[in-house]
Image (cartoon, rainbow, N blue to C red; front, side):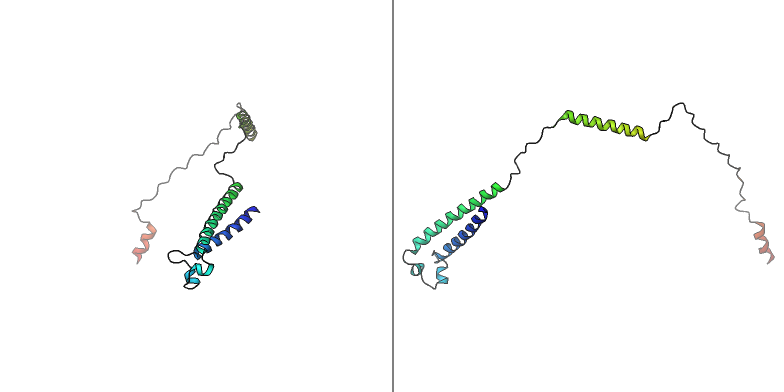
Length: 156
């Protein structure tokens, strides 16, 4: 809630500061000569307008700086630093070792339950005999033409 109020005040101070800076006369007489005719600021606001504008500029600038710093402090209190170290729970090495041993024991139990026990004295059945391959037949020579194919050619 306070941040909203300071932000609203900051916007108002910014607008006043811009207005005061633009209205006061400088070397080129500021915007006073352009917006209020070719007259002087003193003719519009009186003879002591230059002192008033200087003081108004100073007060506006100080208020602007105060609201800027206030907004920064408010936002800094809202957020947490990324560089801030957190205190973590101490690590119990013995507890980690016990948990690791427990997991290893459970893995051995599940491995033993998964594989059936095979007695070492059990005879391994012999592999069935593979029949011998039949004798290879000789193929006819590639040059020799079959007799049936040669006969019709000569009949013509």
